[in-house]
Length: 231
Image (cartoon, rainbow, N blue to C red; front, side, top):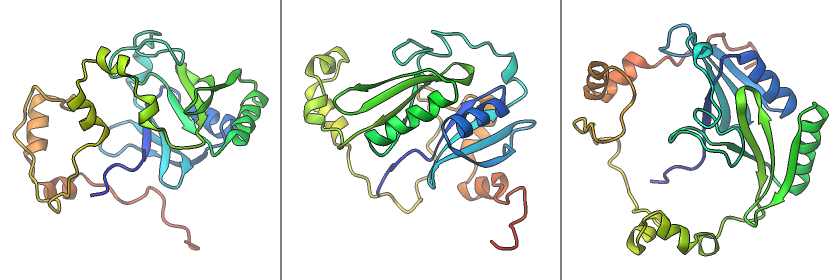
């Protein structure tokens, strides 16, 4: 099993889809690739902008979003080093190929009237920092080489996090797993483990449903617009 090999899409809640798409397409140059009713969610729209052919930033706009207050230090960090509630997105760092590209995207951001600082040399990468709509804290970074864990795992911080040597080795080299061809069934629900936030009865019904039934009943593979004639 190859395992995780990247981020397919990062989904960000928004109360203003148009504003986010304007920023990400004009300021950052990411192409709009999808904008449609979110599958299985009433009155909610989903938008995707492209980073590359297998990596996207997505936005979700539902009717309740506008009524939820954004609070710096709670729902949003507000800066690359600011606090926010556990489980929230502290900041997002996008990648570019090299330092020349980093300076070019900095020029583009500034040409659109957005303040940005950096690059800072972090050793493992060079980064620039700026804000996006709705209090997003954003970064663009580039690395000359892969991160070397022998230099970037600090023993003092390892101890501070309560990680012993055996656990550290397990974190650095997770156990290999071959898989069983998709034959493993859902275990009984263990409420001490992370669960999706939905009504208890809905979660129990969904997680006990056979996989083939989930796929057959909940999938919506057809795009909202017919394929063009030259496709």
